[in-house]
Each structure stands twice: as structure tokens, then as C-alpha cells.
Length: 86
Image (cartoon, rainbow, N blue to C red; front, side, top):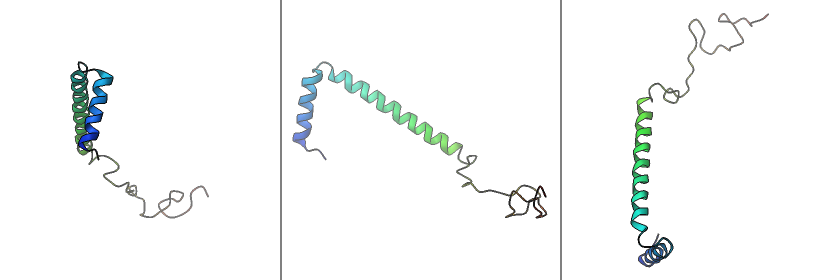
């Protein structure tokens, strides 16, 4: 990725653009933002695991027949196999 010389050039450019007094403040705010982002991502991931058993993706979208319905029967047929509406 970056070598030492490229990092030094980036630091020098940052000092020239933002000034030496603003850099610590910018670094602190970037660190806070990163911590908040990581904690929110962790909370979202743990929330997804807690709801995982109830979510449709946990069931892998499997479709179970309704009570009294034959497995593999189409929805336009009644449970006995005769077409509906005829």
C-alpha cells in the first residue's frame, strides 16, 4: 500500500491544509466517529443474531403446506385436487 515516504507527504500536506492546531481536534473527532460506527455495527450484528431464529432468512424461505393441504398442491386447486371455480 503506502510506504513511509508517501505517509510523510500526506502528513505534511495535511498540516499545510488544516494547520497544526486543528489536526489533534480532527483526529479526536475521527476517532469518536469510528468508535460510534463500530459500536453501531456490532449492535446491529448482535440484533440480527437475536432475531435470526424468527426471520424468514433463517427458515430459508421454505414454504410449508397449510393444514389440510396436500404437499405439492397448487393454489388454484382445492385440497381434494379438483380445480377451483369450476
